[in-house]
Image 1 (tube, one colour):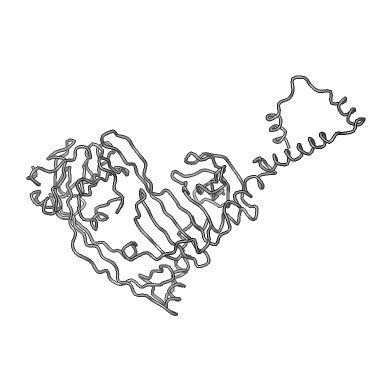
Image 2 (image 1 turned 30 degrees about the horizontal axis):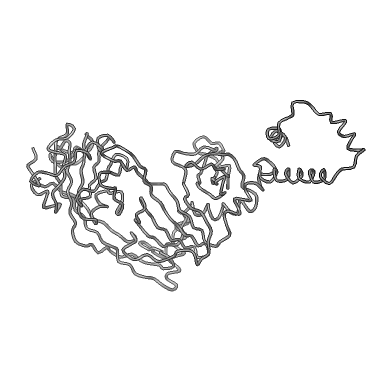
Length: 453
């Protein structure tokens, strides 16, 4: 009540002259109230009732916030959510230096009745991967948003703990689930909690996090771009085409030194380089990077054998004793199907070019006397180039399909990615300013190649 009184005092300031309440009360006993007085009292009662309903104070929190959050969660049988976070980068305009963030996203449809998940991964809006599989214990975000969030709102165990701003959106943080658990480090109990942030405008979830004693670890907030519960008919559980999924993909890769005169033939294009020396680092070695990409053979398993494999995989996921009498090595469950993985069949050899700027010498951690090993522990800059999409993953490219616009680079950590005349290029160094400077200095190799000094 104290909070309500303070709010009323703020909204309706006290008049400059104190009224004579005794005279007012005396007059009230003598005079009959007009219909307008009755109307005014009724209006005041309704206004106060509305104030208690919408104000986020103790005693009204359940009505004003949590009930609205429950209504916004919907009651559909399928959870549809878009997560943002976990991976991302910055697009840097090499001419102006302007920076624009780019994010990775996961769009997920989860059908608890079938324990089925369809996930589409995107980077910068470009689709990178499709997956259709049965939920496992690693999908803790989905477990939290389905098993914990809505039930906590329904049974009244959820509670509002703070207000905040997330991505420019004013939010309430709600503790959905909390436990006091011991920490072996200090042998004390700590509050481990799962929290969901809801928009103060729409009351829909916009973020989630896990906290210890109300403290959030760095990078511990998972952002939600979309949250809804929908019908099975409105959900997307389309099975991805074989080429759209990374399931079963196997990669065999490596590199070997080459004469720089072979750089153009290895790349299949005029190479880009930083000259024979850059930032005080000599061009120490050119390498042919190569890989073979393939897929594991898959055998569909049905009937009782499939059910035994499912049971064994569940035991393993729950960290129970393994199925000693039944080997499940290489088994996979995707959607409603069970597969046993066989050996991989690799395709043709794919080649690309690596230019190492730095010191070349004997690697002391090996038993061989190899005086032509790049010494990566010393200052260096590495330029990887390929025209072959199948080689991009082995060369460490962040995205298989996203491309920064011409004149820009994608910066992730100490690596930049760019496209130049159809060549996919990555540059890696120990410092961000070095990779940006190298991207600006990159130019076609004259004549395609020349000898390394």
